[in-house]
Length: 149
Image 1: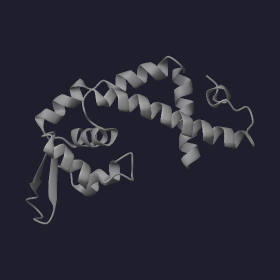
Image 2 (image 1 turned 45 degrees about the horizontal axis):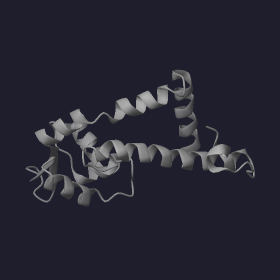
Image 3 (image 1 turned 30 degrees about the horizontal axis):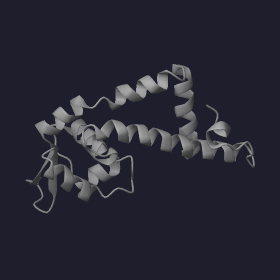
Image 4 (image 1 turned 120 degrees about the vertical axis):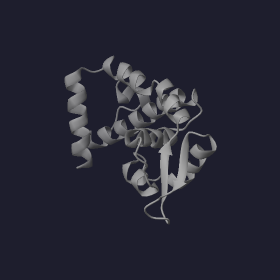
């Protein structure tokens, strides 16, 4: 549905204003879908992001700094989120052998199993492919890269 109909506003200052309002609206729409899917597994989008980062590192450990650098939400408190994941037994934290001041973080078997059960990527791909072609998805990705450019 067109943004004008979604927010019941047909007047924009210009196409740039329309585009950024559309981006914000679409972000919130996607975020609601993501939260609903992850709520089934009792994790937040930020926790999911950290688990995916650690799965990508597995079996190699990661540090908090590595996680912070790779997180999608740069405003998140990675240390606090890791604490919550530790309390859920989804990740393990150990003292780094090479540097006793550092902490190594690895995803646990329980965390890997949880990620196996989450169908977020499949759900998002089905939603996106139902509305845009592969070429349009590529163009959208390129436009978003240019927007951040």
